Image 1 (tube, rainbow, N blue to C red):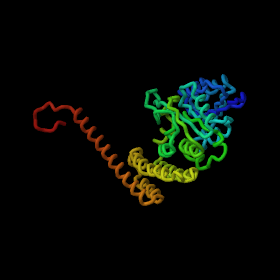
Image 2: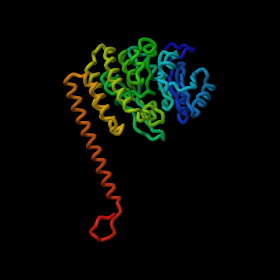
Image 3: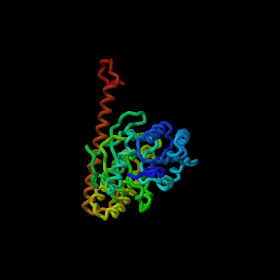
Image 4: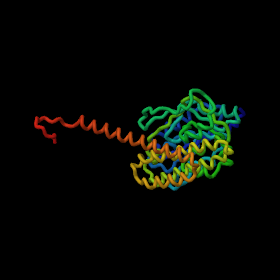
Length: 351
């Protein structure tokens, strides 16, 4: 591969916000990479208040040609700004973009070299990713993201049906040219970036999976999207379900409508599973709003899909009811076992 010693071949895009306990591990993961090409680290600190920026400045001083930060004085995400779209992708100079957020980290020093070598040798591949370990904020192992038992090309249907979490963010490396030109507004303006980005890249070329655990995804981090989800208003959650539904509708055109039935299955999943599961997440609040949302989405389906969704919702609701009943019974049994034993012989209930 012909290497320009000045221009980075890879732009690593990293978002950080109040990641002081984790950012050093993230940056060390970048700097330990063994590559025969130059790369840059574009890190965006979104007005952290916990000392994250101080750690970044330390690495910036040590690696000024690699670490290229933006330090915000006001939080951009809270203003509705798409930070990656506005601040990160436009300044990427590399032929390829790699992603890793400030609370995640890379564990294999050959990760970038291996993924870039593959992309250099396979022009028809738009993106590649790999297995990742999951840990909680205390470092406890929570499993992994192993999708297949060997290195392989990823079936299109798998990517469409399994959502943005199918590909760990810190494992992604993809071609910058697809982001610099032709990236649709409906993808850029979506409330999360992973799912539409992955589907868009899938429409542009093949996707390859490496069956190697080369990064770590940290879950339950305060301020992360998964944690913020638990705090959002129920009506906003319903709006986002509709937005995801509509995004998949628009995505069909990028695949020349060859996978319309697969996208429809993904939409059926959204309506049947997420609506029902969201009831428990929000403790049964605003059931009327859920029914109204369901009605709006039902209008977009044919009779066959309405029957499928209706059956799925009934099944999931019944399953949910059984789970609640089971928990109630277990709690009752536990309460009885722990209740104080009556020490009298009078045939009266013990108080």
